[in-house]
Amino acid sequence: MRNQSKRDIGSRFSNREDAERYRDRFKSGTRKWAHRCEVRALERALAAVGDSVRTIVDVGSGTGRFAPVLRGHAKRLIQIDFSKQMLDVSREGFSLPEDSGAYIQADARRLPLADNCAELVFCHRLLNHVQDADDRRSILAELRRISRRYVVISCLTAPTWIRAVRWISTAVRRRNPVAIAVDTSTLLREAVEAGMKETRRVPIRRVFAPCEFHILTKSLVFVVQCCIAV
Image 1 (cartoon, helix red, strand yellow):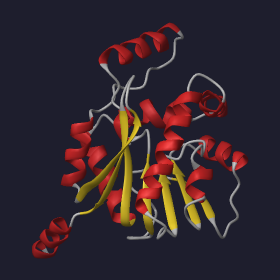
Image 2 (cartoon, helix red, strand yellow):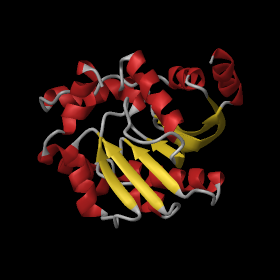
Image 3 (spheres, one colour):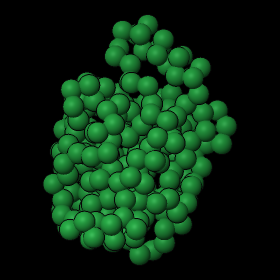
């Protein structure tokens, strides 16, 4: 990410204490209910994709809280995050054998993976917080590039009043608040511009800050346009 994005996301979890706090928040803390909702929705999204998934890449994998679910639907799971500390916590919580998994520290705008290397690419709680449009487009282009078939992203735009409460809460605790989330319509428009199309939506929560997983596939129109341009 550029400087602003790094400050909001990457550097926010650049030390061990912050990484463990993030893990615990979703494991047994204030976000435990949210995690359960996200796991159930992800299971439904993966079921909709089917059983033809050999490799899944989790971009922005964090502490690996979805690793058990993703690994249960693929033979190989690659976790990628900007924060080494987050990857270390993930490795300790759900260790993967070398032949069935990998942990890679990398910038989501420049993923060190080959084209079409995974049947499914998963990106959750990342794109909504990347404020720079060029950075988001770069990430979306990379997600599409490394995916052979599917890209699953989340759209988590909370209502204005909830965002205000969160901002006040982080300010009172003297922590740097995460930047305001990018809205769903913007993300989906940029996904189309990156050469993908939406095939299905899977609700994560229907009330109290509604949010969804969006299953995307590569757009054939985009491929044809690229071939003509070449």
